[in-house]
Image (cartoon, rainbow, N blue to C red; front, side, top):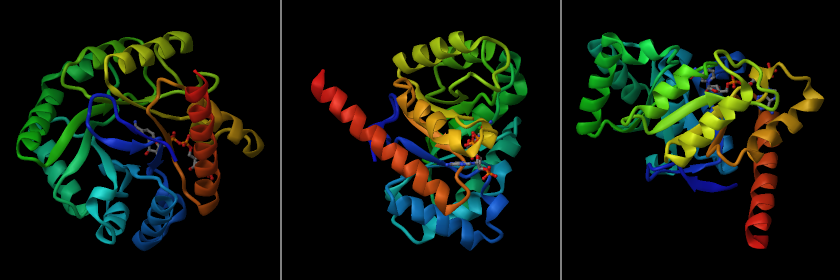
Length: 260
Ligand SMILES: NC(=O)c1ccc[n+]([C@@H]2O[C@H](COP(=O)([O-])OP(=O)(O)OC[C@H]3O[C@@H](n4cnc5c(N)ncnc54)[C@H](OP(=O)(O)O)[C@@H]3O)[C@@H](O)[C@H]2O)c1
């Protein structure tokens, strides 16, 4: 497994990120979800992504209860926009995740520049700032869901956004608001500015034939401007495959860097 610093944050993350958004598809209990998270940790996956809206913070919390907190980096999100509901979401995250701090808190699914700039979302931002000052969260970021173009301009230019979770895959599928080529330029610009970059939809939310998935996942790991590749693993076999590809990518990148 390759570990790297997540942009200008001082967080060390595994390049493979466990996307816990779809855990409930296969894990009927919190314990079943926690077991998968711990299996991934045993394989070196130390970067875990969840959200209030996924309902999987308790699954991660049960796993976190069984380990040392500093073994992992937690990224979670809230879609709540006003101050009070966002502040409540942060406290709920701490309680469900069984921790006293979250490494990265994201504004969930920014859908337009106006969305980021609204007075409502600014309320959530204030709650994030207060939580940061209180030590409840360490870094602030956002996810952009499937949006590019003006949304990427807005989030890249925001000085308080340290981390961006965005869509990227081999054929630029599921992108709205701009071209794939331009989106890759946005990602590169954000990366060069020191933003932490994670990519999702790497296998188009599972909408790729099984035989072709390794090639699509490898494309994600080949994207030099992505610190983390967020894959929505829901079964043991997904973890085995994705960890294998992550390890092969790490070996390839090490060989390339030694040759350079
Ligand atoms: N706006 C946001 O912030 C946002 C939105 C979406 C997702 N996310 C995050 O990103 C993560 C990834 O979501 P995504 O939409 O990009 O999904 P994805 O990783 O593109 O696809 C996940 C789905 O693909 C299938 N799959 C098949 N082989 C797999 C493999 N080797 N590894 C992983 N999955 C495999 C699984 O479904 P089947 O087995 O049923 O085919 C799985 O549920 C989520 O878990 C979540 O943490 C964030």
